[in-house]
Length: 429
Ligand code: UGA
Image (cartoon, rainbow, N blue to C red; front, side, top):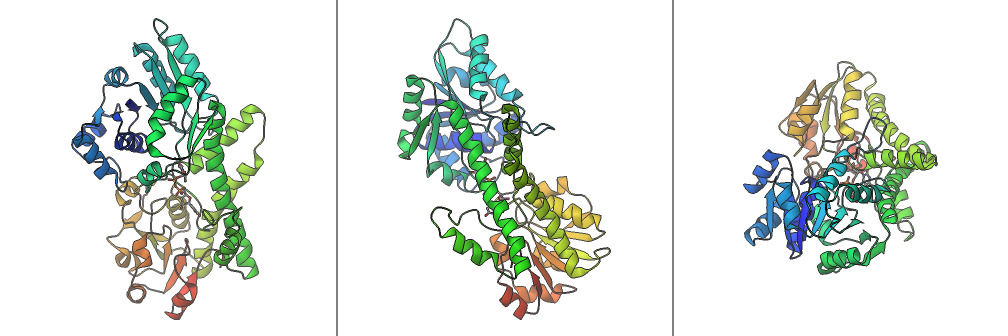
């Protein structure tokens, strides 16, 4: 099928490339001229494993192209995926003005049937709003369908997640929309959940909320473990082996970040509020997450007593490993917390240094972990990059002013570390 993807960010670009990989012909569209130029030159605008190879392969096969010409994209495509940004407003609600603008543009431009698929994470009832907008803006009563098809891609494994999904969710109103969506996703051979648009929209927010809730739950348990002298890793293992619960997303740490969980749970709280429900459970999930970062700073302080004038080497800045994404990264609040205590902060990340430099002031950015640890009173591990798991700890210790390791992701084994002569603090153990 000829498919157009409007918005070539993380979600749009991965979707467009993977749809081409499935044998469709896709056009990735964006109004950012620089980004489209980069893509035309074979350069990826962000780091995502396997994406470049997939893009190159499908461009060479003539199944994938990039453009800033939205009229061309609309004209050429039977299905149009809306994958533009839905950034949070001040009150937490998603800003849907770009979604509306794209829907209007499709309605005004289309001259034959189109299937319009919302791919961006949007509040429930957005599909209905898109449909209303398009009905008002279309010319000559050209027919169209609107559908919801939320994405469940994780940054850092987005290509793999698209090609191997646990499920594909499609929400639609007509048999024609259903047939088109099944044609698009048929080649994936994945379980498909067919439902109405509202349910599909809620599945997305409910999924991200549930996953965030698991993280805040285990972080709360980690606090109790510390108080009780238990080990949260063993607790997570014991709890997670119950198939009804599952081990995934039970890693205690400095809290969740990224552009999805923090913004989506706030948006879902707002959606519930507007519908008349006070989603206090989710507000608590957010509160626990905020506190987790403060707790981490307090932990560093507990070991070093006064932070004023002390040097802390921070390992890991991205919100999780295998990405250069710094949006809502816990490292930002943690570093600002350390700085406000008067500490000097040195930092290193294998991929997110450029992005971090734009967001952090008064931080000395270092070339590697050992450079970061040099003359530091403590090293604070914030993101669990594989590179840190393989550190030469003896070497690290020799360059530090005092051998203190605060492990925000429980990467190291406390006993081994202590045997090496480190003062060690993990999360919930
Ligand atoms: C998340 C979801 O996992 C995807 O399914 C969804 O499609 C995506 O949001 C989205 O809505 O677009 P992502 O934000 O890329 O994906 O990252 P995750 O791997 O889910 O991690 C989110 C945060 O939770 C990270 O900061 C990570 O360090 C933290 N986390 C995760 C924990 O602290 N503990 C865990 O056990 C798991």
